[in-house]
Length: 232
Image (tube, rainbow, N blue to C red; front, side):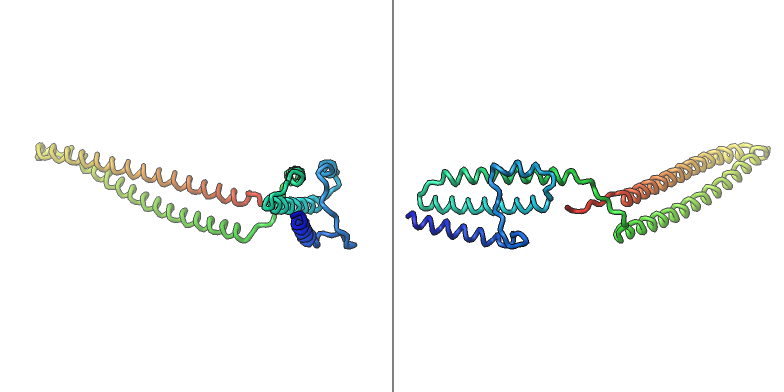
């Protein structure tokens, strides 16, 4: 039983070392993972680069995987794993400390804002400009048409007032004139109401045009000023 455990541990250790062959020094020497008691002190060294810290994190994670494999193998054979459990707990603490250090280093880096205008953002800006110009053109046409309608109604209203005045001055067929006058008054009221409605519609269209332009300009500014952060 003991020999079987030894062979299993030897096989797992060999697999672990083989998986870390690429993590050697320039002269071919392999540097093993740090022991848990040395990790905290090692991380306090401000000269250590992120690359080295990430390399140590990889080693510790491989070591933790190895320990878990050993623990599983011993559990299958009914062997005790107290020592391995303690070692795995220390390695897990080391991994947590290393990850915390990496996060601190990443958070301390200043944000990098790309100064180049991407093709996509430029296309969006061009599309927004064309959309704004088209909308402005349509609104100008609508406003011009409404103004013509208002002018026509004003002319008709003036003619009706003139006719009403002429009818009022006429002494012939007074009863008939009174009826016609009332009819013209009612028509004038209707025309005035129509004119007021058209003026309100023009005001609404102008407000909608101004609101649309403001929103498009705000969207354009947002696209231009939005910072792009490089992935770490």
